[in-house]
Image (cartoon, rainbow over all chains, first blue to last red; front, top):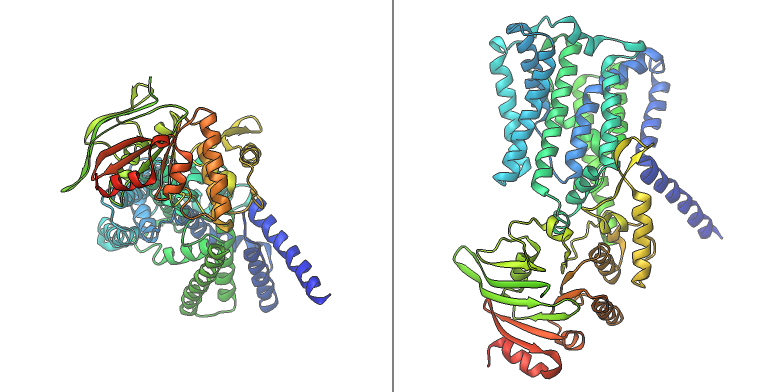
Length: 333
Length: 246
């Protein structure tokens, strides 16, 4: 009697899990973590539950959210991109350099930032697929290279200030009362969710992350697909660089330092597998929101930022451990 | 005209000569057993047919058309399917995702947003294919990694048969299966032959090869050592050619 009750209960839970996973493309557990975290913060801080703080969290999440989208695509394909934080930095500096130092028209700031990001990503992809150097090493190298280039371009390694108003609007504007970065994040999320969950591109990405041999056997151009994915990841980092630059009204060569840590953590607690073959963009957004709420809450509670770094690192290790258990369970079954 | 013609194919990897001028013709609606010791060149020969490897010399033709330079994807479109020993399945994806991998049908969402993978159609067609094969699979919505070896084999076979292939290459399809599952795979091979499909069966299990093939080709050190009609030979003779005792 007792055991059958538990069985029924667990199958109800399973069904709910399955529904969230297959229909909404989000892990049920991630949503629950977000809700629990939000409730805890509401209880702990009187400032947490307000529209302005909510917009604050979304605004703070937008940069990491865009990075986490690119990271999710890469992880789904069984890859890894550690260079996104540095690419964010170099993209902002290139954008600012074009329109401030060179005094080119303002659209060049956008083209410069996005172009620098995509180019760095493409170079990553080229080295990984053509020279067959592990992604871990190539993107770790790019982490150093991109940061170095950012510091080289910026005069005396300092930030480039004073961007044209239309560019600043991308970071500080509020169309319909919503901060522009949040609008950008939502648009990019919708587009990439479609790409990953519903397009052939997305299905092939998941398949090569799951079993690269299956991809080759069925005629998927695996190398070309990987190059595209790293280019998209770079492009997303470039977009995040553009948003960051516009928000602070400066091209800062130190921007995005250790952001790859937060972005990878966000993607993984959103339910994307570090081992490839599984993941979702909506999950990544939920993951980014969890990171945002965590940071915002710790700020409101006046916890030193060093502890936040520790918290993020710990969450990453925990999330990967849970992912590992899950993967093992699925492989055994 | 023969369905598949292989003429003077050689292939070397560095200093190792794996294929040494192979000539082979395969007719539609026949089952050919390809046997040979480990390292005889069976897998390499098959991969020059599927396009994973390019030949060094010689050529491969399908229905008279040369296949030079065609990618594995293009060769699949032209009717060459291979079922790999490790099955090459994406284990975390479900049945229809695997069956349609690389060839997903698309539709327009709301009639105008293009490129949406038509999952409903994939699921329906996958279920039909599984039923046609007479296989029992708990649910096509589960990741294939959760299935037994025989069930996974069925999914791999379904993937090969869904797009009306002309030639199906099977690499050790029975090696990992239980006895009853072996029977159903052999029955399936006969059924495919009835439908006019040419089958190349690579196997170490000579019992299965003797039972289901029309013809047995022995590969040894990158050359065709013997080409035997199954009815007129015996296992002893085949083994003799495999080990080079003739």
